[in-house]
Length: 227
Image (tube, rainbow, N blue to C red; front, side, top):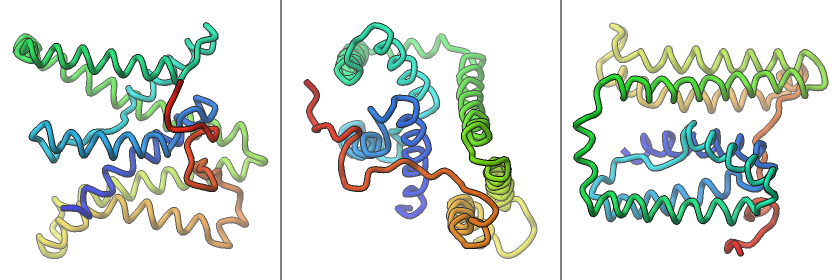
């Protein structure tokens, strides 16, 4: 269970943290998202009584952070201070909602509400993926690097879909099909990543890598506490 949950917990941190670092000009990135997800996940598991619930960034988190950063830049307001106050006010409102038992209002929501929310999440995931692929063609030194990024993305998505649906196939034993379906996507991602580091792949083009600091530090070398 630990090895199965490790990849779903880490993958959004790398995906959305790397994109967030680009969209916020390094103000927030993978280190911040990793620390917040680890601390909040452990606190939520201990206090909420639901240890199997994932706590981490989604497409909506990325969209909100990007919009807030654009607003702070246009209004000449410190982004990190504003982000901290937004988090504190959100926590206060959620605490009030839990004390007032406002979760009972969910009975007035229909299936349409859930479908619209899931559709919005899917649209955000797909739009960010296509935006990243488009950026590879715009910023790449040559067209070959952009095509190489596109091929790696399509290959990864196709094999992940293939291994995920392997549970319903008739090949091998049920236990092996279950294992391939559970651990197939992370193994595909690791395999394509290692293949992109090979000599023959690097001869075809240059792939952009995840922006990470050389040392264990936060974005822009700032301290942990924000004034």
